[in-house]
Length: 474
Length: 157
Image (cartoon, rainbow over all chains, first blue to last red; front, side, top):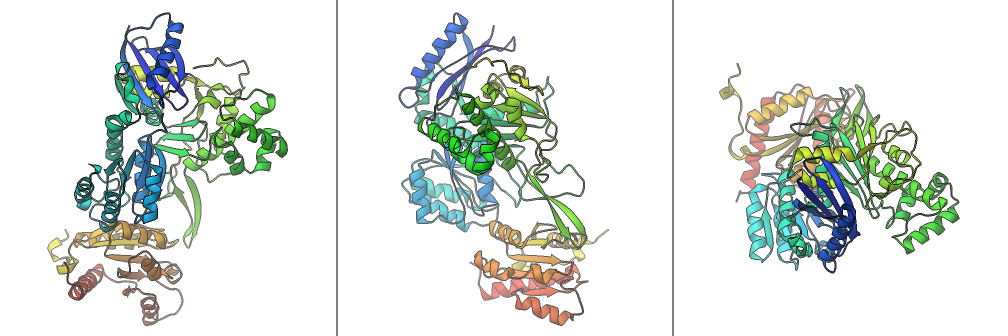
């Protein structure tokens, strides 16, 4: 047997998935607490002990791979020139690398921008600006500002190639750790974020893992490959594209509801599906990730209610506004709180439904009819996801909730909102064993095994809700 | 066969200049603009073609990011005056104070003389306005001439 251990050093839990690579199956799952702030190995040892109890004895693992979102995740700040152009391209690169975007800046950095960046204390800054041969002056200015700052983090330079080397040299001379990579927007309207994404991942492996103390587990882990959101993305990409031996699932969407944020990943070109539709705005990355920092089931429960409108929300949850407020107060007082009463379960379902509704709405493209002298023309912004064939729900509220199907249906197209280009008739699935990240990690070693294992974790949702208690998966 | 050698080229100060082209507003007429963009590219300019249905703000954003030297606005459906209102002011606001601005096409509807139309657009801050039926050579000549004048005024470093 060739066994692999796939670890997620999370912010709350250290999660383990032990898989049999040859037999293409999950051997066992287990979890321990997250102990990155003290000593990462304590939580890992506890999780391994739990795994051992389930398996009798631990197999000899051929591969031990990890992802991490612990210690605040990979905190990044992006800087670009025009907000909708290189600043947006830089944002896309950071999100695509699995970062937690803590700040996004555009145009010339002001002294107060710089103070804000210093206060944010990011792990990595991505500095963009100007197309190749385009504006050079602003990125030069921003590079000089960063040189004069107290920042000690890595600075990845992905700007106008005419000045990129000069900017890196300036930063290095000021004692900064500057890394040169290709421009995120080499020509107008051309998004080339993969080199920047690779550079971010490189810095993550070489520096951040150490800085966050995760490398204390070096004796028990072969490699910490990427931030967990990047592992989920890799898992989604693998399921969509398939491997040389397995046909992929095609265009898909992953919705990941968490305590603090809701992440949405789409793997789809998203080009207009009808003739004569004009695409507007920047091209979208094929694998696109958005993070909704205001939509979290626990840390941002009140923000979800506010976004939906308290009275509309209360009606959906079947609560009065007074009851709703009292329950939100209780959640804010104890963010670890799990629902126990019928009313709390209803509240959580309404929170999850609303988070999915809003997050997918922001991720999906929109169409708009513009009246011209020649007649109406349809313009599309963002990705048309109406043709997506699979929608996968992951994260606690979906994997453990009582009505995952009705929650996940919030991702679908709604006749009341015809201009939002959401999936029309996809198969709805739950990543029941939380294996997307594990698939993303294992893909680096054995894509076929990773595909088959991640695929078996997908549980299609029936039209009728399954009300029997769902097995709790660590 | 087109004899490339016979076509007008970017000369002198116009060499290596970056131009933004596009059709402004809710205007879908793309053919003339595409012909112009191809001719400009063949003449040796670096052309960023934004295509049809382009809002005024997008010309300006593209010009900032690419450090463009000129913006060439096309309008064919008669609402050019409305769409181009405040264009120069928006450029100044964005720090593109001196960018060269051209406009051309069927700029207005009704019985206005070309002289009157041209006056209107020059008054709005465009450096040149071109009537319907302008040949691409005329635009290339104008660009060569304007870039030469500008480089004579501001010696390049």
